[in-house]
Length: 477
Image 1 (cartoon, rainbow, N blue to C red):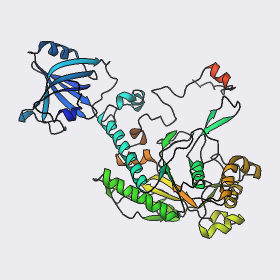
Image 2 (image 1 turned 60 degrees about the horizontal axis):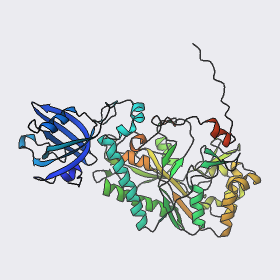
Image 3 (image 1 turned 135 degrees about the horizontal axis):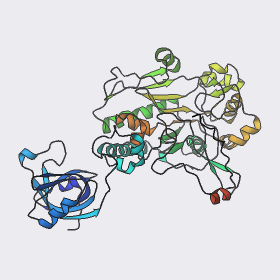
Image 4 (image 1 turned 90 degrees about the vertical axis):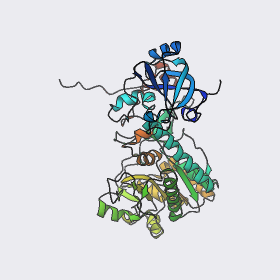
């Protein structure tokens, strides 16, 4: 018998001899009879060992939880009194005829059964490959896969082309600090990891692609903040010849369809999604990501809304922008609303200029933001001047964008919903780490790999890098 059945497949072959393999979930004895719950990705199967089959029975006595085993035997109906309605395979069990140990396991540092919320998170992250064996996290990963596949299929039908953009790129200000990568072949020079594919996707619009998307990793070197990750995943898209309403309509249709298809038990509070101005949101809810749920204790309620009419600029100059008077509230590539284009071009009335930015909010979390972009180089240049860049800095940092737009760029706009955040809300999870296979801590550490780590002298020398650490202050006793 060569074919290995998954547990759920095997459970349908009543009266037949089958082979299954997986992990020992639990092991228990009732008198002389030994029971093992065998687990694979598809589910759990109860396997019965009886003393009359001595060799197999004796081996079964030695096995422990999380050992990996292969078992052959007959699938039989359970007696009515023993049926387990809680699991898909609860009508049947396997009468074991042979048992092979494929791999032994040490005693795990925590229980694999249960949801794991009560276990210290650092330990769960250190042994993440064990943590992922639990039902809840396995289902989170499977649902994440389904959400992303749904998005891909939906956008494919809408005529979008999936295009990958580089991960080694140039350091440019986009609202957060860049992660920097030294270049060995061009010593003293550095790449940056992209905070988002913002510039590349706009350059793809200049290339005539018209409808682009990808599922990229984005990297931001931020100060520790509870529910943030140094790398996160977006659905990134851009459309040519589009107005605000076109992008908003597309995303609204995508989200409504996604929820109805994959989460039919969830209820969307209001369709079409309500639109609130930034001013209204701040006045009424004191936040630009209001939680509009009528019943906040209802886990299946989804209150989406759009926030629009954001100011283009705000006072201040942190986040990697030059020390000037103004910085963009979102990113510098946005286009002002039509009524304010003259003000932008004349660099006047700056604090009142409204932008074409639109944010989508779900249950009090911002799950995506986008805008229509300045596709005319002279308008984009004015934004950089208002932020405080000098002419030579604009050329050095953004020359490639301005030049590209001088060769007939179409009007375009886009959005980038956050996949980690969307999946965590749909899965009723308290934070995004629960829906990421291998997350990092709030301060960017990976306990499993012990990253970040020091690198050896040889590598540093090849890169012509010298590390000078600040002197440690002596702690007061």
